Image 1 (tube, rainbow, N blue to C red):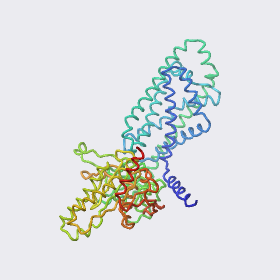
Image 2 (cartoon, rainbow, N blue to C red):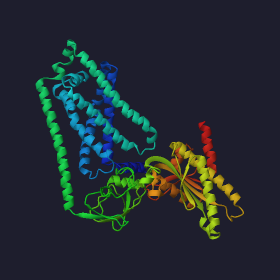
Image 3 (cartoon, one colour):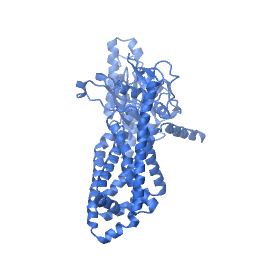
Image 4 (cartoon, rainbow, N blue to C red):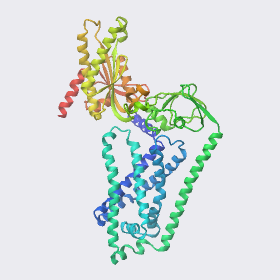
Length: 581
């Protein structure tokens, strides 16, 4: 029992290490966006009738005012606003993308614009028992104070755009985003449009209802709208909160200026990039922020959010004086399989003394004339199956042959492997000496990707058998090979420099596949697949022998399946296909 519980605790601890302020801001923002969608859908009911609005707001209020939900929602509002103010203070550079400071400015303006509505409706209900629903609010917007209508429409659009930008930054690295983007865009345009039209239609109906004395007596009573004195009190509270919020933003801006002054007085440090370039920067900047401030190209697929590892740097020399990695940084580095203390994330490391380093991934810069014809593919986070295939005994092969003959045989081997991968639906990705990395799942789901990789492994065995027969007169021993297969979330994109960009995958799953291929030598088998691949491909638990192995860079042993002869995989995959049919 303890053995079973330990991995679970380790997994939970690993997940906790990955939670940072950005993850909290994402969760709280998602809760607020869910409220916004509910509210907008409610507004859209105005296109039907005011009665539909009343029914919708009843269910909307029943859910969001349910005490546990209300606590979570208002807590999310406070935390998200606080984190936005903290981001304004903490962030030193806004040169990453123009949309990012726009998103921050829009988010910070929402509390100032919405405070009058919140105080008038929610606080008025709590203090005086007001019952302000759609009839009372529409009366205010379209009859009593039409100028407030534009403020209300502005805050709806601003809050919606702010939320959509946040969702875009979250989802753009996901594998499904390109397929879902047209539908998400249509939804992002349709929902607020229907909501604004619903408000307009309901406002027209309210103007007509206002001519009815009975409607005015019922909907504009003191019980629902409150007295003039109560209204004045709520107005004063609104003004005080607005001034306090603006004052808080002013203090944050003053704090930024004071920090910049103190950093300059606190001294400068030298950042040496390992290519002869050295910058003098104030203490407090992250390495990535320093690169952006001084226009030094630096790879960063996620924009400095610690969601990828492409900004990684390796410290040259002593790294003992560096600040300890934050839990989020440690989580990302552990996820990509490195616990080397000399490797750090440039977006998270804020050195306090001179630093020598070099970038592990060269920035994806393109010349002006090449950019249009060879656009760089932006990195994405997605599930892929990685297969490493390596030719055994190539060193001995080269010792007894002319160089041309050796290259011919290795090329025939890689050709046989590549053909099997392509026929199975995969993509040959990198050729490393006499080995190859193949990727599966670039255009299929994870289930099919795993099955494609297994079919490719079986076909590789058949192709190598044919190659051995073809070369039987030239080979003293048949060509042998080793295969490692593992699936998981990776970052895919163009990596390299200028005209030397290559599309490839980076991440723990790729590293594990390479290490499984290496293990085939020690375990005397042709292929090793992770249990993750076996389960996702729907192979039976007893279909292949299981074994626990230690993987370098992982704390827990990993369950794998060994295959002495990969040709048996063809029958296993075909059997599962027949069962499914």
